[in-house]
Amino acid sequence: MTDSNFAHIREVAYQRTGIVLGDHKREMVYSRLARRCRALGASNFDEYIRILEMSDGDELSHFVNSITTNLTSFFREQHHFEFLLETVLPDVFEANTASRRVRIWSAGCSTGEEPYSIAITLHKFLQKNAVRYRSWDVKILATDLDSNVLAHGKRGVYHISGSDGLSTEDRREYFDELDQGNNHELIAKDKIRNMITFNRLNLLHKWPMKGQFDVIFCRNVVIYFDKSTQKVLFDRYANVLKDPGYLMIGHSENLHRVTDRFKALGGTRYKKIS
Ligand SMILES: C[S@@+](CC[C@H](N)C(=O)[O-])C[C@H]1O[C@@H](n2cnc3c(N)ncnc32)[C@H](O)[C@@H]1O
Image (cartoon, rainbow, N blue to C red; front, side, top):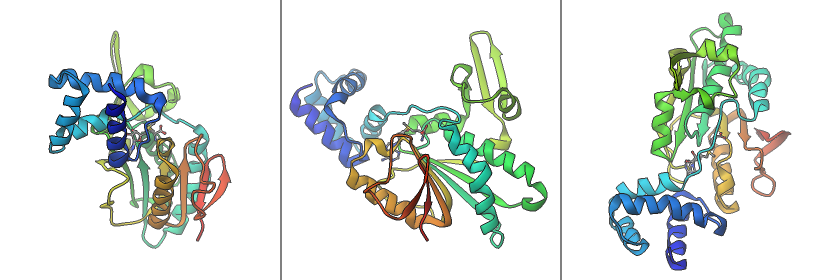
């Protein structure tokens, strides 16, 4: 991969996804796209780039799937879920007594561990407040740009080795287990699966959703974006959040000098300023 190939690939990645590929990502990009070259029979990166430019979106979606980083886990950054259960849900349910409708968005949901962790938390809250909030319209939207990870989330099947963040009680309560020796899988039960809708969405593009959200999780996504992309995105989040509206971001991200539309509550938890 020549310098000019890498520069070109970087530009396509930035324009199409907002992801900034620094020099330190060159090896990763090389090895992932070398796989695409082999799959397509392209003998070098010049040829690969030509195919990418000429494709009507097919190779672009493989390209995007190749450059995204999808690391995630159940109850990652546990304090967000405690805050959700103890503070955010009581507040937003109280605020929505007229509409009886609550919406949570997991933006950049990867393979689904984040929206399933939200669903488990929500299910516990609803169980505790069954009389008050019976038959409310409560939904989680889970979106990602990468079609492979979305398909995984939709399937809702996880290898036991990736379930560290789940307590034994939550595992029993919210997953069926299929143990076939070296293939030990957890399968999300309908009571959490049915709360979530998985959709492909590029955060840089137009958002088709009509209604507003009460809570947005966008964690460990903007870390790959530059400040100007982050600013546009967080201002758009503020626009689609209700009042009260909450935003959780990743542990290494912050809104300082990015947007002043949110009040920091500490621990990368934010509330929209009304
Ligand atoms: C590291 S994962 C974070 C998963 C989860 N939010 C968490 O914190 O565990 C980042 C996800 O953001 C997605 N992503 C990156 N750029 C995106 C974009 N422009 N639109 C939508 N999703 C994007 C990637 O595909 C990836 O699945």
